[in-house]
Length: 460
Image (tube, rainbow, N blue to C red; front, side, top):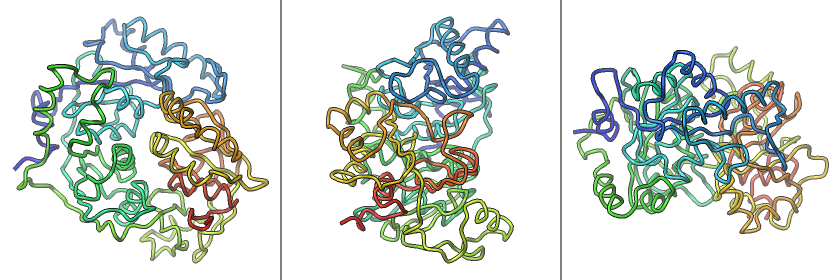
């Protein structure tokens, strides 16, 4: 009667509330604090081989970059993290490393995350990696210090939720749309305190990139973590990766991983059913992923959105919108394709397919493509996707978190309306006063060409 979550929890629970941690990932924005505190206390890292340090959050993504960053004090964060990682003997993916990239992109690429493992990182979207049948969640710097020193964490056990997606998504509908549909329907706290397992044909039909997008957005659903049971698609994706098992160990791993699934009679604290046929291309209108509607829809009233009047009014005031306004046709000022949600090769391929042979609208401001990793960047360039983006008028950047969030560095302008493939549309998320509409990469591409929020099918 065990769910996949329960199986993973029992395998790692040392005693009630104390869980063994298999992998730890740190980035330069918060990792230095944990390592500094560890050193100050005279402690060592319990298992250095299981700790990976990434430069991704505040690195500059402009071509020819180095340690210089637009974030005030950013260079010090990078230098301190580098020095600490070397002092503790940790695996470091530095600014110019060939495998550098966003934490939740490079970990799967390298086989750091594997089915059945526990993995933590001081980043709220760590649950992305649960797409591989791992139990992965975000933590704070003090928790990271504890995990580094002991290989364990005290954790209040979350509940178990299953979201079953029946049928397959229609052509032109993506995992991002499925996630926004779920959050808009059930609220930004719909999965609060839960380890959410995504199941059903609508999930198993997704490729690994789509599964990662879905698990990534579970954070915006309030979830503790998200999981997808590993299957042959997972195993084929992982085989041969740098840190994945090899040879005889690979066969042993497969034998164990194939048993990682919820039993037919597994009991969940809550279940949600989603009909894939009802999911449409989505876009946000307000200042939370919950504030999303079908791309062909209109800005809802407070009652239609299920929001308190004051919450609804604040979102509308910030976004400069009014109830009943269609989203299609709304003029935009900028476009962004990137983030740990939608910056993988398949995302770039879909956006490039929309842009091929077209140009962004005259007068459109900043339009950026930021690949999720250096590997994604190389693979995209091998397919000449970078040429498609450049010819269309987009900037082609180095990998990193970049304009997914504003940390005192690069930003869009106050009052600018931006279509973005990121996961959050909070107030000032992409710059002070910036108005962000989150959607899929292909809708970002189509909107950039039209100079307004547009659907790919409108371009012909």
